[in-house]
Image (cartoon, rainbow, N blue to C red; front, side, top):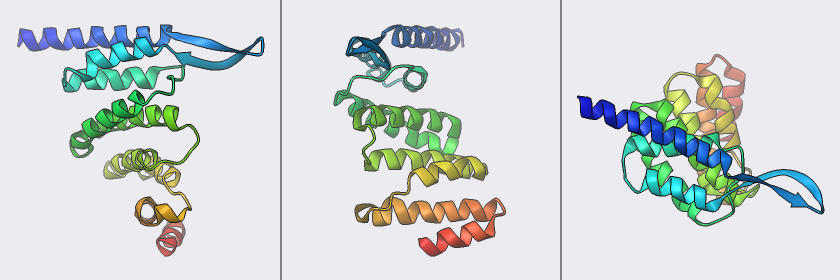
Length: 193
């Protein structure tokens, strides 16, 4: 019992350290001699966070890493390692989706943030899937109003996304509207799907 308590305390201390490291490793870009508000994170600091958190495979440290990513106030450098970290966080969220949805949202939210840092404004299936999973976690809790914006963000009117995510998310969106007492919106989304 004392070992578990000590281990959890060390996880919390490591988490605080990682968050401080991540936020202190941000620098402000200079653009044409004027200060730009885009803050870029130090890649070495992010790699240190990932090495400590993800390589152990410890679920608590993976959650700490997710919280560290969510707490970043800067943009990570566009590096393919972001996609590998996002994949690890996304896979780690799968077992939590049915059992502990707030933890699932933390993991999917961090994966989403990393993917958005890599892909920018472009549309990518993994970004849409993360939004959909966050919406699913809220809807399974019965919080339909919180789920709706995530399902809406996961709907893209492009042929390559016809079945997933569009039809899937339109159906989930209609279900949320129906269960939250908005039958007109539910019928609209079911008809579109």
